[in-house]
Image (cartoon, rainbow over all chains, first blue to last red; front, side):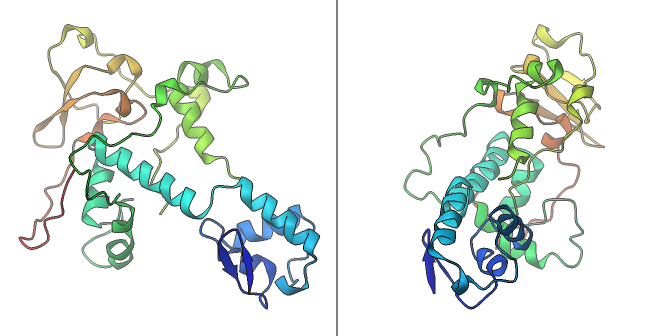
Length: 163
Length: 89
């Protein structure tokens, strides 16, 4: 069991698979990380050298994973709930958010969608801090004029950039 | 699972909007243009967005800017069971 960044990783499994034990890393991202660090994807975690493990740790540190990622997701859901969109209401009710059918088959949504509701018992009536207002985030300088005029869009594009 | 981000229209096209000449007058604007993106100039305006049957009042705030008008006007009447009323904000 390798303990890395707060998560126990199974030693005997292949590296991409063990990396997927991080919340925020799946199989594909695990393989990408291996490619980036020149680790053969069939290597087991116990066969890595200490230097490689350090590299892994450094790379993973730069990404949003685990608690940080969960917080980000909760904030996004909170944003939807606070402005009163349909998406927010779906999360509250534990329904599928992306337009899937609900007459049958919504079990995963029922199980998983409720966990993104921010649990805030003691300060339920106090105003909650919102994510940084979109209008104050400057557009990156290399964006075309249309995006510069719409910092909102640029901000949304930034969200999509991974690693 | 990712906590949904709004759908993206290619940036070079610019946002999809329809012009509202009475925007600054302060009176509620009745519209069926659910696909119109909310622009920063809309903030503070009051809309009545069509949901197929009625017009739902929507007060535009700064946080609503990248979204579409239709997102704030649910089109279905959801079934409410008496024992599973979720606590809303």
